[in-house]
Image (cartoon, rainbow, N blue to C red; front, side):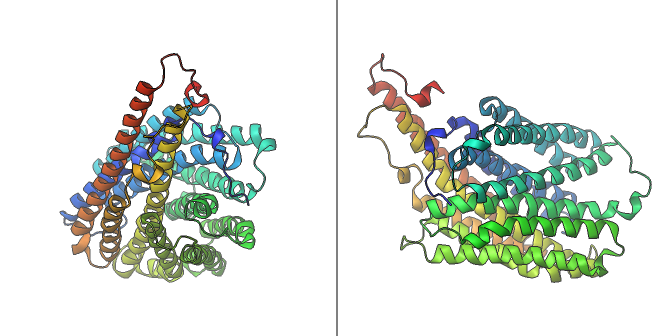
Length: 461
């Protein structure tokens, strides 16, 4: 697998950055919704309207925003695969995604079918345009892809397929709430299982496989580790995807699902895949070439720890959910698994990527604006100071711990939501400081260079 990146293929800054700016905003919205949830009398469980709204603010507003931006940025740089018409695709997808997430969260909180209908249209457009642009780019640029990028592209293609399945299931269920269509005859046998499939394909399929594929490049390059073992990169994503398909088939067409041995076997294989990935990533981070861990390293450690906890608890947690239903041990198991995967794994990994990608993008685009070396050009590490990133890491770690324990002790939900809000605010502050330094540097470059200086390649784009 290659470790060199083709930075000359990097798209304009705004293509990915607008998605990254969504992350602290929706993280704060999720924290506020969880704080509001803690003030009510309804049990803190998976089907609480506030929990549903917060979960989708995190999975779509935070994770999907970061993942779509990362794909638009990393595919051209890591694999020389350019998203089709990124300058046009990016703002349209971003607008539809942002408005769609707000509509969906509002629909869950208010029970308003019109908002669910708006979410169906907006989110459907966002992901349809994105997938068409990515697939068209893959077809157009396949022959010019970078040597050694096959491991990344396999995981990315399977993640895109998982995204399509996740969105199809989500749109179908949201359309039912909006009254766009009615369940088909005989739906009583499989309709109650669609939410579980939606969650599994979204977290273990789309989010999990995309983080895996991106980390094959991001971890060795930005964390200065050895590359992932070839046996893992060749087989993990296909095996996990096959396990997801087998699990889905057995869950939909067998009754009762909790007693089906094939479903439990597929779930066990899926859990083992992510346990192997988590252990390997943890080992690579511990044996990295840089002696002292950085804030981004700690975010990845937390993410891998949460992923391994979720993988270990997935099968017994699923059994408890089947036995306990929507109350008691079953509800606690569902909440703990969801918190571990979404907040512990997904949001931690996103933070770990953003603190490397954003400073590098800003530094790289500032360099592209200057055709000559300038003494005042800031270094990458100056865009976000490590001490500032560590402050946010501490708040994030506290939020992960408190919200995980809140699955068992709901009284900790409000302190956990407050910690999450602090984390979101610190992330927004750090990103704002980085952007201010970038804009100040750009103004100095414009003032320094002669007015008739020819634009660089980056400026022409």
